[in-house]
Length: 237
Image (cartoon, rainbow, N blue to C red):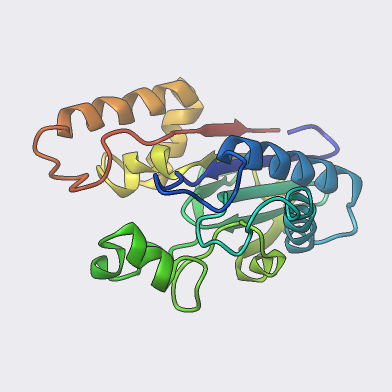
């Protein structure tokens, strides 16, 4: 975190189905373009709110392949989003879908910023990919991701806090957040403390060890895949 300002952008691409997405491009192609647009707009447009920036970035990315792909397909390439921007006065933040942002205050207290709509859905509604696509993915009463519809920016969890109240930011994709949310190895404050003390790689390594130990019985993961992409970003003044 520089003395004047900066930004943090973390995207987690949604795993595509085997049957196609209506798009000729890959999820990495999509996240690279969306992430690039978010970074450029966050830095160059300080007068825009973070939801406005996300909306413009989604629109820009959609325009780049609207002529060749079916962007109305429910599994068009998409991603979760963590976005933060800070100045000398404030820290603004935005979260969409199941990635997490932790705000560590000057006294060490940790506030998690969560979009918990997916976690609150009945398990029966998540039984199959087809059911998810038909009923809850980017649907009212379901959950939302950054895909091709700019209006999803209105569904984000956002906020702003004084800069002097933030000592550090920790962004976690859901694969890394498993340490707290799935395996209950610690709470969010302990998660932030672990990253601060031992680094981002240490958290990922601990998650991987827990996943491997759970591989046979799947007590925690149930039918979920053993390993999920895990990204951790730690930023401090």
